[in-house]
Amino acid sequence: MKRSPYLHDFGVSERHVVLIDHPLRLNGAAMLFSNRSLIEHHRWEPEQGTYLRLLDRQSGRWTTYETDTCFCFHSVNCFDDGEDVVFDFLAYDDASVIAALGTEALASGQYPGLTPRYLRARLRPGGGRVALEPLSSQGFEFPAIAYRQQHGQPYSVVWGASFAATSWQSQLVRVEGERVRHFEEEHMIFGEPIFVPRPHGDSPTDGVILSVGCHQNEPLSSLVILEAEQMVPIAHCELELCLPLGFHGNFQAR
Ligand SMILES: [Fe+2]
Image (cartoon, rainbow, N blue to C red; front, side, top):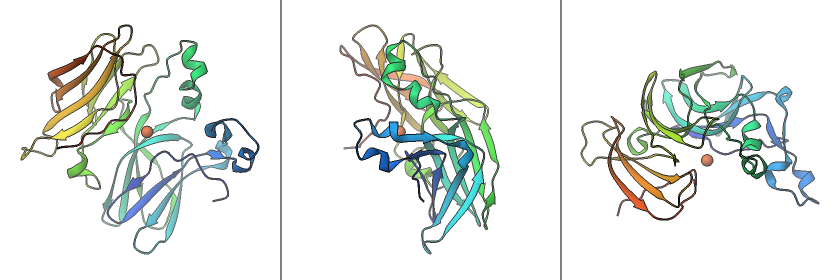
C-alpha cells in the first residue's frame, strides 16, 4: 500500500487474516516536520475506495474485495466457512467519530454517539465486490464475544456498550440478531463488557459480563457483574473514586 489506512483492529480466522482498508489514510511524509498528533495526519478520502484485504495465512497470498464506504474501529469475529471467510465488524458511515471523540468536541459538551452498524462481509474465493449485510439494527461499540470458545468459529451472541448521542449514560447490550437485551443504570457510563465463561458451563455463552462504569457527576465508580444471558446484575463492586471511561478492559483468571 502506498498510503496506510488507520488500522485499529483486524480479523483473524484459522486460515485467514482480514484487514480493513477504509479510506482514512495516513500521510506519513507530512509527519516529518510536524508537532501535530498522529491522527491529524490522516485524511478521509472516500473517493479512493474502501477495501477488505484477505490474507491466506499459509500461502501468504492476498485477495482484495471492494465494498461500501465505511469507517471501522473494531472487528467482532472472523471465521472460515467452507471456502468463504466471514468477517463481522462495526462500521460508521464516515470517520467523523474521530473528531467527535476529540478533546475539543468533548470539552464543548457534545456527546460522541457510539452506535456503529453491526455488519457482515462474506468473502468468497476470487475477490471482487462484496456487499455488507446488517446483522442487527442495534448499534453498539466495544464488541465482546465468548472469545475463548467462539473466536474464529460460527457464533450468534455479541455483547457491547451503546452510547446514544444525547447523553453520557451508556447501555450494555447483548445482541443476537434482533433479540437484544439491555442493562443500564441512571447516570452511569459503562465501557467495554468482558465475557467470563462459567467453568464447565451449559453453553458457550453461559457466564458473566464484567464492566466498569463511572458516575457522570459524583466521584463514584462501579464494577458490575451481570448474568450474561439475561443481563441481570448479580453483584456490584463500588469504589468512591472516578475511574474514567477507558474503553477497553481485560480479565485474567488467577
Ligand atoms: Fe479499540
